[in-house]
Length: 253
Image (cartoon, rainbow, N blue to C red):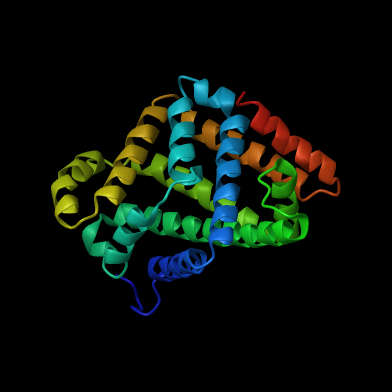
């Protein structure tokens, strides 16, 4: 159980996300800009890992990351379910998955904050240039203006942590059966989205870990490519950063 009921990382993260969403509801231009940021990021991920997505071994894990962590989806349903159990999550899910749920909430919060800040920069750009631009150059300008390399490193660390947790969970005897048995209680409690995420993640990494070193190789590849991209985005050459984004987006064509 949590040692202090007033300190709940899931509740705190959801509070931030809710506030940011409410701010965007009252500002259509900002909402469009944040949507553009998320769309470019999802397309960039798909382009960066186009070959990995086609790989029979690592493809399912890459698609899981794309659809569940990088997609420009509306995660409000899953967030609402998180909010339902923020104070009692330890009594709803097995202890072994609680930390994974916390890492997911933390990642989602960090992503929403950074995307929101980039959206604000894009809105300012639109006011000075005469219209919202969803180009790679506008994205890089927003990224570099927001900065916060430590926050970006933490964001990547959270992504990798979720993968590491899932790879560890699949080695827990009886956990897959327990998750399956939780389907009905989760549905009754209105937690279908969270249940779906956990089962999909478990099954995806269960298949990956059947290959010797499969999970560690996949996560190491993600870490290396994302770190390389961040170094370019935070580098002195804006042209090189734009070229990296353009190349990733072009890989989809």
